[in-house]
Every structure is written in structure tokens, then in C-alpha cells.
Amino acid sequence: MLFRSLQQIEEMGHEQVVFCHDPTSGLKAIIAIHDTTLGPSLGGCRVRPYASTDEALQDVLRLSRAMTWKSALAGLDLGGGKCVIIGDRSDNSEARFRALGRHIQGLGGRYITAEDMNTTTVEMEWVRKETAFVSGLHPLDGGTGDPGPVTAYGTYFGVRACLQHTFGSADPKGRRVAIQGVGSVGMGLARHLADAGAELVLSDINMDRARSAAAEFGAKAVEPDAFYSADVDVLAPCAIGGVINPKTIPLLKAPIVCGAANNILGDDERDGLDLMGRNILFAPDFCVNAGGIISVFGEVRRYGQQSAMVRAERIEQTTLDVFAHATSDGVPPVRAAIAIAQHRIDSVRALRRI
Ligand code: NAD
Image (cartoon, rainbow, N blue to C red):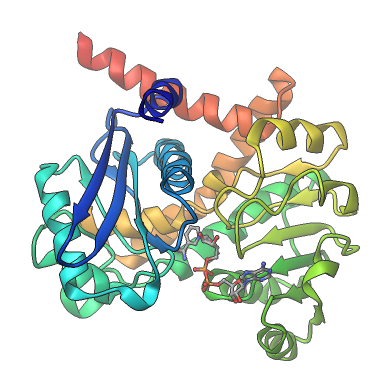
């Protein structure tokens, strides 16, 4: 397994992968540092009861690489990193996160952690007791708090870019958008779209939540399975990753897929090409959901939420640039977005060698 993992790390371009263990608190974690050319690697720490160490490793390798592309594309001076803790949220404890904080401190600033799935400002406060290399703190502790609103705002501008590219107008008025997952980001996106005059179709695994959100926006609520075949202009997955795959792609009627969930495509290359072949525009999630990292970076660089919101608006132009690049090269937008991000990283790396 070790040889295969090393080979995979080499192929994916990671700089360092650290396996962390603390017998007293029961911490079992993996920190992956993908690329630090542009700055320290920054990415959230998620807690999940992975079925195996290999499953956790695959998750952290893919997520950390996407963080490199996300920050590079958003113009931030950050590299890509991520941390996964193998376990259940109910086992989150001060001891476990302080133990993680010591491992992060040992990396000397090459990795900065933040909240992610099943971690909150509470866990980040515990980490901070052992290291300064942590962000996503509560505003009362000098942090920028929940990045969800900035992510939602940025995704809204990603949707506008998709509308512009497909229909020649970015205006959401009268457009129909289906949102999967009305949590922190999905609700925020729904609010921006409703304010701009879009018609909404809302779906959530928790149907009570979907119905109450639908009532708030005068929208239609649909069962989770009906999301994929919704007769709308835009499908916005804002719940979990991997939802656009060979099983769901044949069901799609919408000409655009643009959402905030990380790793929306089951496989970037295979599903990106399949969508392009069907004339469905896919906005790379690591391009449109960069509002979260823009917000968190504000904590490191000390710019406020207002400035983060303005920076998130630039996602519209960045997404349009990705589509223009994809069109001129005849490649899926995911490939174009990676190429733009990689170009920035390579040019900075070359500059440093001078
Ligand atoms: P959240 O937990 O607040 O909301 C997720 C919602 O999705 C919940 O209402 C949940 O019931 C619903 N859901 C879960 N599984 C579902 C399924 N299979 N089908 C339909 N609905 C389902 O999470 P969030 O912070 O809104 O994040 C949403 C997505 O955006 C995640 O994939 C996250 O990784 C990504 N993301 C979030 C941020 C951020 O700043 N919060 C930043 C970047 C990316």
C-alpha cells in the first residue's frame, strides 16, 4: 500500500502527506500538503467515519489538490492543503483537536487549518491552544466566522457567468434554478437568486428543510431524486460531492450545472468530457465556490468581510475567463480551469528560480 500511495502522491503532485496519531485522545488524521508555491497550504479539517485508511487518503489527496487550484484561480497567495480525521463527530474533543494542533505546529506553517465538514469554530479554538496556524475562528476571537455567506455570494456570481455564457445575459431574472441542499450555502444562494428575480426549485435530503425554504422564497420543493431531471436553466448542487456522474448525467435536462459543493463531478476528466459532449455547461466548483477560502484568507491577511464580498464578486469574471479558455482550446471547463491555475503556479515557481 505504501508504494502505491507514494506513486499516487508523485502522480498527483503532492509535496507532503502526514499521518497523525495520538493514542490518548484517539486521534487518527491525515494532513495532505499539495503545493506551497504560492504560499502556505490552507484548507479545512473534516471529520468523517471513513470505511478505511485508504478511503480517507483518497479523499484528502483529492481535496487538497482542489484547494491548490481553487486558491491559485482566485488569485490568493495560498497553496492547497487539507486534513481529514477518521472518526465520528460525536468523538470531537478538546484533547483530540489539541493533539491535531501539535501536529500542525510541527509543520511550521506549511499547513493552516480551518473548519470543514463536522468541525466548527469550537474545534478551531481547541486547535489554536496549540498552534497559531489555524483560521476560521469565531468573530469574538478575531476570526471572520462562518464562510458560508461569502461562498454563497461568490457562487451567485458563478451562476451569473454561466447565464452570460449560455444565454448572452447574466441577469437571473426569470431564469429557473434548482438548488440541491438548502444548508448554509444553498440558502444563501437561494436568497441572492430570489432577490434577483429567479424562479427556484429546492431540494434537500431533509424535506422539511426544503419545504420551509420553498415557502420562504415562493419556490417549489422537490424530492431529492427529482433534482437531477428538473426542467430548469441551472442545476446548482450545494450539498455533497460526486453527484454528477454516469448515473445522473443521462437524467439532466438543464443546460448548466453550477454549484458550491466540492468535487461535484464523480470524475473530473470522464464526467467533464461527457457533459461537454451533451452541450451542458459545467462551472468548475473550485472556481465558483472560492468565496469560502477568500473569506478565510481575510483572517490571515486581515481584510474584513466587506472586502471578502467584493473579492467574491470577481468570481463572475474568473468563471467567464475559464469558459473563454475552454472554448478556444476545445476542452471542458474543468481542464481549462486547472490549466489557468497551473499556469499561475508555474510562472511564480519560475520567477523564484531567477
Ligand atoms: P450544510 O451542511 O450547511 O448544508 C448541506 C445541506 O445539504 C443540508 O441541508 C443537508 O441536509 C443537505 N444534504 C446533504 N446530503 C444531501 C443529499 N444527498 N441530497 C440533498 N441534500 C443533501 O453545508 P454547506 O456549508 O452549505 O456546504 C454545502 C456544500 O458546499 C458542501 O459540499 C461543502 O463542502 C461546499 N462548500 C462549502 C463552503 C462553505 O463556506 N460552507 C465553501 C466551499 C464549499
